[in-house]
Length: 239
Ligand SMILES: *Cc1c(COP(=O)(O)O)cnc(C)c1O
Image 1 (cartoon, rainbow, N blue to C red):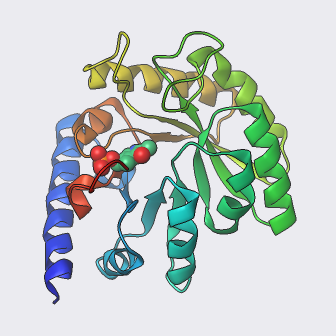
Image 2 (cartoon, rainbow, N blue to C red; image 1 turned 45 degrees about the vertical axis):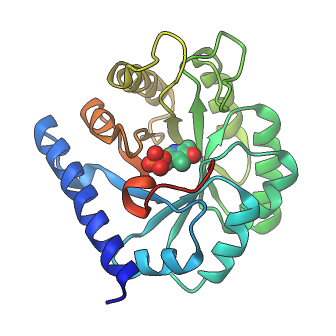
């Protein structure tokens, strides 16, 4: 085993242990939670190693980095999640490799994603990104729609050709009433997810929790956790 593979294997084992413990503590089955490894800023060679180690879901947040990486890993059976703020001029590229876009937060994006999915003859899974700190009618600083904008977007995704409404995603807010209160934030997301499912029963994905707060997300009921640093190491600079 290379040093890098041994390191990633050890990190993955630790994250796996954390998810398993959190599931046990919450009385949930381990299979109810899917680990998505966020590979942003790390090379395609790491994605390849992660695949060898059994990872099947990866996430990226910038198309410029993700597109070449996905191409380099096209032979691997991986589900690619896009989790970053998405400009409409990047939508065509993202649609060429992403299976799920977790950062849907405005109707203009829904229209663009639908057109690109139809053009590429692909079905694209969509999560609506919720900004729990955003005021009514506004969007969050790191993307996301205010809770009262969820239903309008859900209806738009539902009506859009080529798109599939999969559920909700959030990033725990750094500001506002939920700052530093991850568990409360994720509980709130679960309430919103339950409400969404009442009208859209197939939209049962809840993506929440990162390296620092995955236990809170699992306790709240998240179905997907997005973990970067704890698997790959601290990213140099911003990412
Ligand atoms: C980077 C990122 C993550 C992973 O964060 P870590 O703290 O490195 O685990 C999760 N979700 C989104 C949207 C991200 O951009």
